[in-house]
Length: 282
Ligand code: PHE
Ligand code: CO
Image (cartoon, rainbow, N blue to C red; front, top):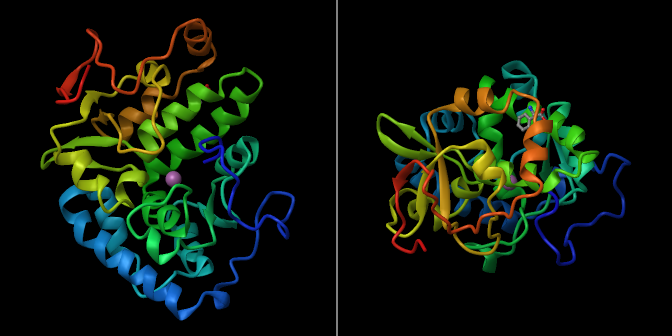
């Protein structure tokens, strides 16, 4: 999403439409790019059975995008039937309003370009592999799909309330880096984790980060780091909890949060429900 980076964006924004969409131009990907995609896919698909939530695993299994960079039009046919979501091709990160407006209309923006081979393990800006592998499978899940639409609508509304920082933190700690407690143990539904070769095992198994029970206001009051593995993850009990907790009008929440100092990404508070206290915790 937008607002996460301050360096110059690397996508080509020259020939987009007013809503920032472009054509995917699938035919323009090189064979080397398809091969890099397959390598990325193979590695992550091998990790997912141990670390991803079942909803993600089941959805990924029904999709067939290990053979090369997927065609957006083919995915959209399936998505339309499943949840009514669509993906739209974009040059890269978007302005906040544009991003929220797409989500509010059940359109998920997916970056068209793929990382370079030397970025196999780490990439700063989201590329097509992150956006697609991380985000698209859960667009097939009805409750998660509704949450994301509600989030977009909430973003459009928050714009006038000077509350985008709060909502950005919620997106970060759920859609990008969320964990879920399951009968098989902790699993992830966060796209930033699912698409990362290193953070996926770290997020679930490492002794270092904190894992805390989901708490909406606490999350909206907590800073995050964009250039290291996370110091804290928040654990939901299921997508229903996420959807229900975020259903109320946030306007009074924003008023309550505005005068407060944000917590550091590493903080553990007396009021936290601790699933795991990180070895590195302050
Ligand atoms: N209920 C929130 C509001 O009134 C909107 C929202 C929904 C925000 C889901 C985030 C996630 O602003
Ligand atoms: Co993302």
